[in-house]
Length: 163
Image: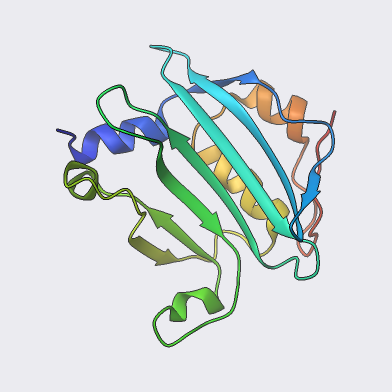
């Protein structure tokens, strides 16, 4: 059983990069994609980070943190920062920048979808979302700077790998 404090600790624990992202994003099925693995500095818990950006609609992107707990089948996405990807009646939040989070209650019920959704103005493009995400998952500053450089100016939509 997990508590919400466990979930928040997984998201916020200090992490360092174990397997770095590729130097260039891979274009696959209409999106530029990349990923890396990280571990908790304190206790070595392993995490994966994925990020993708639609090649035709740069405001459509997703950046997420997953982990594979030993007592649960499969990966759990803890948090995702998303761009705008077209609203529907069922999903009006798709019209704005938004963040998905999983809750401990859902994990404990075997549901891993990040159903808690909040609209955000913390970022306005992919680069801003990536840098915001790297801060909230508490990736070590030296790793953020080494692999992703400094945030670009507002309005930028291309990833700054900084390698």
